[in-house]
Image 1 (tube, rainbow, N blue to C red):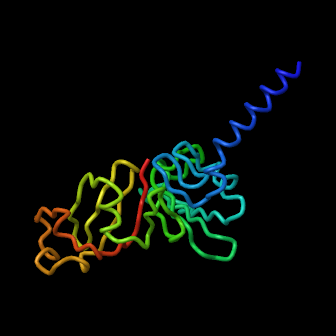
Image 2: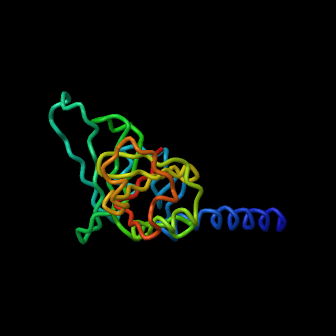
Image 3: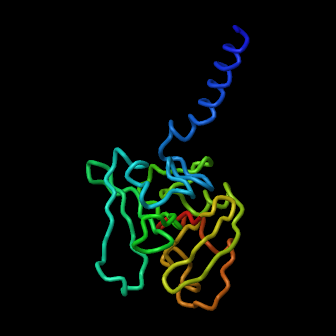
Length: 185
């Protein structure tokens, strides 16, 4: 009987210790979760996930707007934390498809946050692709399903106005700042 009791206590300790990383750091960004928010979280579950924060849902009132409604998450003090985009607008059973990280406290295991520079990203992760857009470039990192947007003002003048130019990582200055940081599921 004592052996069974000892085995149950050992299993319980192991199970709870495996989950302490997420619970102890609500600002940890990984491939399948951001704090307690996971890639399988539904819109209807957001109030339970962000129990200590305020979840603001924009209801357009018109299904013909054709856009996905952004859900904003604020701390109780009013500081904006995240912008969430569900896969389907106005559907409480929809999963979250992307998360725009606003608060600089959110960091990856390799210490990349909104305050990081391009040098920090390329030293921590393998860059999968660089997209050249009108006013920004988007640096994709498949390892964590993330994209980092950098304003073209951070680039040399020869690259700012040519949308057709293929931009390589060596052309981006190390000190280029991240405009915003997104995780896609």
